[in-house]
Length: 96
Image 1 (cartoon, rainbow, N blue to C red):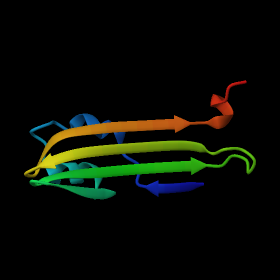
Image 2 (image 1 turned 180 degrees about the vertical axis):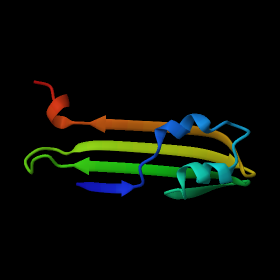
Image 3 (image 1 turned 60 degrees about the vertical axis):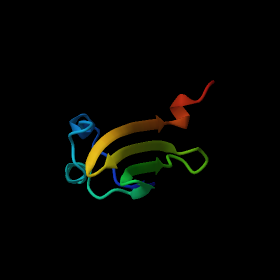
Image 4 (image 1 turned 120 degrees about the vertical axis):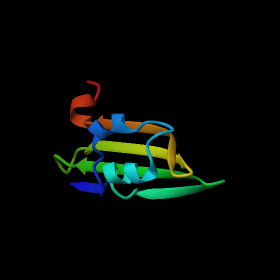
């Protein structure tokens, strides 16, 4: 078992409102970002990332869950965001 970052509460994604939600509200919902990228001109991107790998057997590929939320912020307000998640179970998903 291996994990990186902190699990993102997907139920809170819908609470992000472009041009309305503030950077402080984003941090209140999701905590400190995994990473902050400075874009220039006051633009920042808060990156929230979580990856979890579970090895069922030593001889198989791990079950993997990955989440990534990128929130673009300008002057302290959300301008855009992208939410991606994936889950892979090689034992279940493999083609037979």
